Amino acid sequence: MALGIEGATIGYDEGNMVSTLNHVHNDCVVTAKTALRNNLSTLRSEVHACWVGQSANNFMDNMEHDVEEICKGLDAAYEGLVAEFQKVLAGLAEIDQELIEKR
Amino acid sequence: MGIQSVIGDVKSTVGQRISSFLDAAWGAVSGLAGNIGTFVANIWSGGFAGVSNFDALKTAVTTYANNVQEIVDTYDTSADLEQTFKGQAGTAMTEFITSTKSLLDAYVKLVEKWNTELDDAYEKYKSGDTSLSEAVSSDAEDVAQAASKVEIG
Image (cartoon, rainbow over all chains, first blue to last red; front, side, top):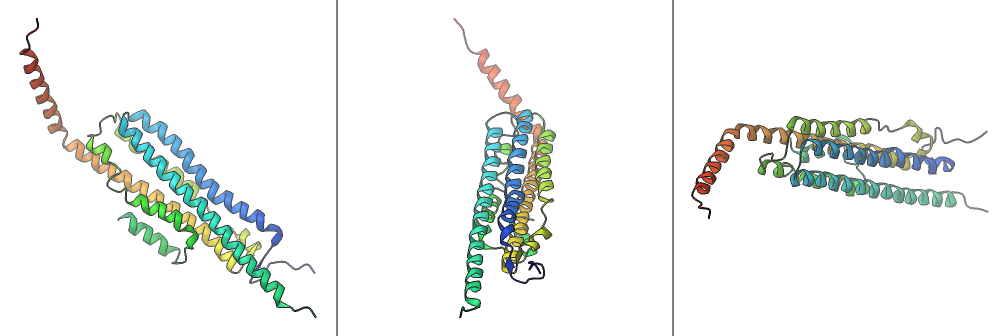
């Protein structure tokens, strides 16, 4: 009988872990960054169509600065998630090694 | 409703368990909250100089916020995660997705609040429009009088 993770209360499916992490990275971090930057590009065009001058440039520079700060934060958050996972998995590996003592 | 209370409400919505790894991102959004009041400073102090179509400007900002919100609304704490992670690992992953969504929700609310400020500033500008025109007219007369006194030759 194949042992699956279904019904388990602790553990991870090693085979799917990397792909799941990549999936979350793409669906959350990359999607958010792409949406923010692409829509900002559209906003810049639309703003400059109805607003000229230094204030318009400053407005868009500020908006882009804000988006980049959030993007940096999202990247840092994902790196933190991966680091936390590595700690959790190291802990699970330790438990696995020490649970049953070899005779 | 200030953005700090918005951020506070969002944080309590997902519980006080927003993991520390999202602090940098939350710091970015919280930092933006300091821009309230200064967002439109350049516009208002210039009397909306250079703005040819205020409604188009407002629509552009609204569309930006709505488009970002649409993407955020697709975030889902996928049941697929439960096929891969159990226990603390699964909780951390779910929390990451939920917190990322909350953070972006807070940013969109911030942009919407800025748009409201833009509206208020423009209303004030319109109500002061007469005095602005009179000042410009008066200055023009002064220039004309001064010019008539200049002798050429």
